[in-house]
Length: 400
Image (cartoon, rainbow, N blue to C red; front, side, top):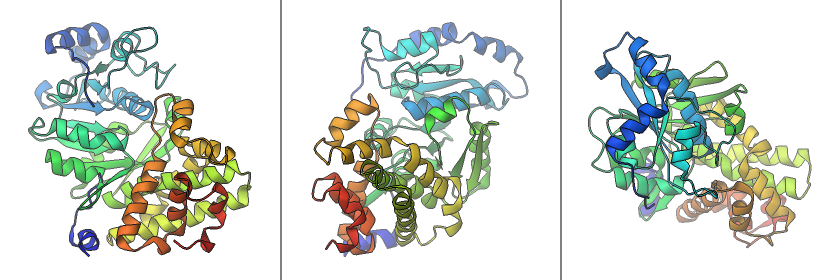
């Protein structure tokens, strides 16, 4: 089978908008200086590195988690002499109900009023609606957007990224193409020609935004040096980051746990209780590990005991958006669609678990693995209406 051989012959398992008018470079530069008075002061006093040798960071994405990532990075950029103070953040331009553009509001108020209201990002965060301009001259790129947009973003940046550039993906999800599934870190590496690490973990963005303690895992390949740089850029007293030499394991944990969270939401919506939910979480973690190791025999068992593994499963099944929306779906007995609930409950944010469940199902079906992963298979069939939510604990009886 061609599809099956793709997984085992390739050492890289790849996962895989139209723009509003952009700010001109000159206007952007003057806006940057006007909106970020802290930058001029710190540029004068933050010695230790020649300005040309400092790393420049751009965050590609500005949703809930993207805004929190920008906040973390911005606080460290001001303190670390090896980084430029200014952190650019690409914003997919939206017009707010009051008629103002989201980018303008972020730069005026230092707050993402739509996706992270009430939280100051740092005066050195500068929003830019022009993707190409936002990444210009940056040598450290942080990708944090819904996974379904990443292919288009990479195509737009193809040929625009030059020099010694490093990337890290905070994107959780995969895309299935005719030649096989495509992981986001590999998509970035292949289309942009740059190395890409990943950061995953038990990270509910709103809790990190108010500086409640949490952990994350950086997955890397090759040299440990770049992983240590990313750890340094993200770490704060309330956000502890650990490097792990296992990109595939870390990224698949971050991807697959959203399917488990959907299952946990069904359990909550049907009021099946904590014992049932614990069982679903255990079975889900087992299927996560089994599928990851089938796709990548190099995946380490120890990765599943990091923040990206068991901890992320726990927190996502207790409090994440996938769980919440799946709970509402189950309460309606499937009469309200996930699209309808997403629009109503998430206010512009995207649900990842349903699309990931579909993508995982496609992989399992092509490989003939459906019977090996009954929980993953059943979640997709409930999401598409082929099974009722109650089937989440009856899946062993189904002929898949």
